[in-house]
Image (cartoon, rainbow, N blue to C red; front, side, top):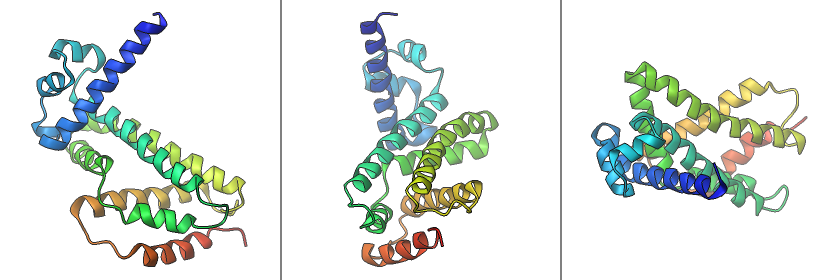
Length: 197
């Protein structure tokens, strides 16, 4: 495949994914039809199937796409913070934000995975990709001396995963969040406990 064909294929996939996100948010996974997504993207149903075998694959890839975008935003925000300052404030700000597109997609995916073993298997791969980004951040924090090397990597991953997915649920159902400054104080104390002794 030449470069222009590859670029067009990627552009088509991105258009379809963006359309799928819009339709999933409007109608939910159960109400979204492939024809609706194809029409929104400016394609026929047949053209959509060239790129994605079905709705579940679209949902799985949309989660990865939105997850990468959200993590890039967080890393950009954290990268702008001077070393050793304000990381808790940045994390608290992320925690206290209203629900995101990713939150809503994950809730749809969790409901689907609970009902459909095949979908669960496919969505597990999407969640594994997102959690590998968590692993990368844990490793970076260890390298920078912010997390004690003696702490078990699997346990850290489980705690951070529970925190992330807990936030998704809290934001998705609209539980009121405390003030960012109060949340930052708690985050600062919690993350401070991970540092080497």
